[in-house]
Length: 480
Image: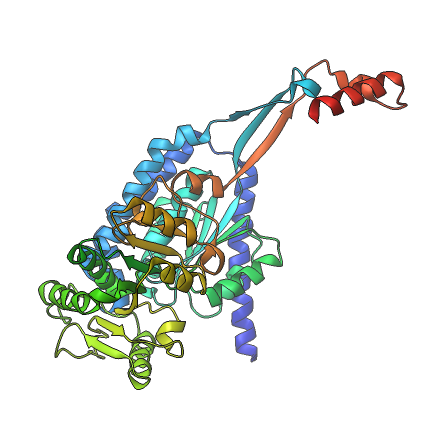
């Protein structure tokens, strides 16, 4: 490391630590914000998004090169503000002290309570694919629980990062909320800070590094990673409906969604019909990839990765179907037509890595057990998408295939539900947020026992005599 690099590293570390120290000092001065304070923080967060909506949409589009306005409105604005509204509505109930059962045979007269209290200062590391959603949604949970937050944005979200840094100070003091731009090395130092909770959304490889850094401080982590999320279509389910719903999700954000359908299992008798229907959908809804409604791949490296994935599959014998016909990928705009990749083998890249783009791997099956065995032989996915009107079959997939979440007869939309938790399992992540589970994740559930003025335990102190023998023997019989 050069002297210049060492000085830059030192500056980053000092700046981050300085903000953490300020937020922790503010937390210690006011460790448990009132309901009114938390409600005001949530409403202010919503106001920050709404009052700067157009600037946010433009900044995200600039970072992407082209990002569909409607996709940004749906995924970054509407879903986020709706989630904040739900948190405001539920907040008083979430904050209630919980009564718990007391063992009256030993602690008669005592009381048990569980008190949700703020953890303190939380860190949030945000990816580029849904940069407002994946910063503001955990922020809403953090504020509902009474915390303070530091947010590190992605290197691919420079325009948005600078906007949020600029506007956040108009709504929140830095002791409450501060955003950081990735200028090189910020994320590494950020993950080393002794937060009271660290939330990371991104790749599994980076997630491992973040967890290792956090472990040095015993900082608890919530990891939202990714993986190869499967869909499976029951041959008795209307195939045209399944294709329509899968292809909509696959083209959304150019497929750059951690919970997107990575591959689909179709009954072997329906393979050709699936491809035909996918081509028909694309011809109707995505006829021109150069249109502004078709989102760009985020950067040149990702564009080349997707092209290399196609070349690898093609070179190893896969069948590649460009669903847009003669339209070719546009490297200048970083736009790639949706493709179906069939007849794949295990040695192909598309079988081994999350696609994270407009490429859909097509696998065939004869019996549901083949699907179950295949998915279970690989890393547990972040999502599972069974398409079937047969409840027994749906239950079989849900019971036999573990995943982070499930949408039945569609894809992705369990993530948009505010009253169910979102989170991965195993290689696809750990921990939950959204809704009440988000409030719980960002809270310490303090167990408190209240001892009454009189306690029978005073008769059970050493030296132990016959009375103690009698009581303990009685308790053994009662509890056996």
